[in-house]
Length: 183
Ligand code: FEO
Image (cartoon, rainbow, N blue to C red; front, side, top):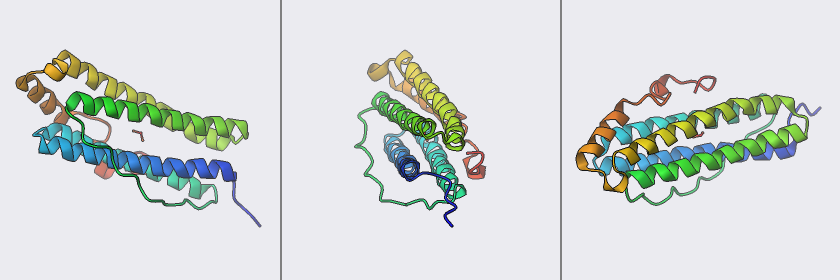
């Protein structure tokens, strides 16, 4: 008896989302490593904590696939993008990445609605809310960088920005204690 409670199509796009979230963790790790080598230790700390958060997102989707009686497929990851030129470009790239991720979440929600799979649609709503938070957070960081002078920001302004990043609560401040239910 087949007890799978999710369609093949939804299984596939949820699997893709597992990979996307894992790739997102790689992107944050890569940018964190770049930031640290440029002397932006606070920004690096923020990026590393956020990489943990992305992995928690990955686990949340992976566990949902399992909960619906299917088997997640773990695939190879993409190479992270090349290093940014400066902090502003770094966060612009992150913003674009988060918007792309929002589109991917919307696509899952749309497919779930089309199939009348209300369980999966309900599951996606946590991610819809999460993406609002993530986009708003990066927008605010970009605003702060622009106010600091953007690519013409002084070393002092960037130092101040970086120090604040190290203290920033991005919800992943307790990432070591985070669970799949509460990433
Ligand atoms: Fe998992 Fe940054 O979204």
